[in-house]
Image (cartoon, rainbow, N blue to C red; front, side):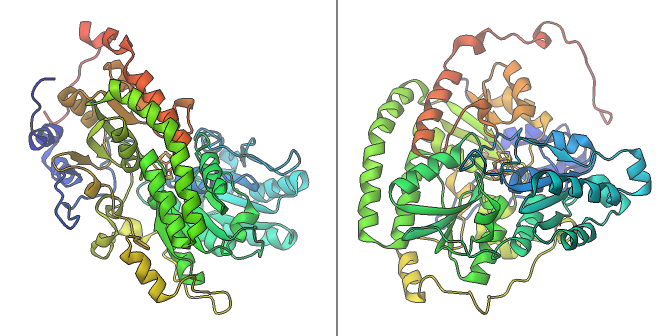
Length: 541
Ligand code: CFM
């Protein structure tokens, strides 16, 4: 590869086509990483509105609420109140899998349910239609719970989904009916929808049931959505060593598991961005401590398992976990070494959501692939720089629009899971409770960190860096591949997976090896190399 320009120069190349005002904003969202001894990193601007006219990778609040946080739960019947497209395109495209416990156990995930709003409903209101939809759903399925998800027009015309829910719950007292004000335009991205979902699940569902699951070591897995079967692999690993996963939020989960999630002694958080609110609120209300884990990558998975075992502090569990890791590592090392011999020294870029751009760097590093640029679509500064910066984050009007709940200790069921001394001893041993160190302290200095990447910048990055692998989503995939650069979808996994945990690591090594080492990429000659079919220039040039 030719000598690369410095990241500072490339940063200039990324923004030099922009008008002055746009460049001024983007320059704060594009940062050359520099890591100090105490994990200090430069400030990056994030979670702000995308500049109108720029095409970025983001989604909407409805996607974050319905698609991401609630979508993977199989027996909360979910009705999208809105035009049919919102419901149809949020229907299983994320590849969240589920496994009902029996053939007769309810599973509504194969259905896309919507009020299918038409002109008439937009003009005269859609509440009647929504009530009718709930009547129909209850007659057909008798669900324990129904979630109503608001799309943009619902907020614009002023339908009161919460009043409808209250009225219908009075009519059907056996069904818990709750609504989400997750209109697509709320906030600046799907991140707002995560927060809205966390709040409602917390106030309307959690703590309603006393169901407990057998087991000496009981925990919830927060922020794991079972994409491509990831949660199945984590369940296998944890149950094998004797740890009970009571509820996963929300991959392969049920309403009853959510409702009784307070009956555990630990919450671990995989995806910090989408679920940190719930972890914090559960700690305040019920005294359940939480810490961050990462089950992406074999080494990270081993580390996370050890951390959980250490928390429970049982000598037998600790020994079982060690034995389990040792056993699993045999096959992992074999495949890893083989794959590494062909991937070592390659470069990658990752631009995904709000957590995977960090987690997958470790998995790629295991086969010798170096990340030279990374960024999130919608994460906040804490996901980049670590939770230590939370007090200094400026709250703008868009964030203030999303309700921040005030939570108090439950006078009856609050129970400290560990004494102050025990928590102190564990944190002295390296467990960081209620903390996340963020992506940037884990990346080497002189890498580029870019928030809310857009199409223009993607093209510049490719031309300048020509990476061996680009990780993003389906919207980016084919443009990048026409440049002759393989793109791995880190949202849907390109119809493959699981990639979490030990078996997932092996799958990932092999899939990446196959993807980047095929000769097909050198044979690609996109049409624009021969004859530009469309030329244009920017309006301000
Ligand atoms: Fe969390 Fe996710 Fe992600 Fe996310 Fe998502 Fe996703 Fe993602 Mo797509 S909850 S932030 S809103 S890890 S759907 S399972 S892959 S953008 S990086």
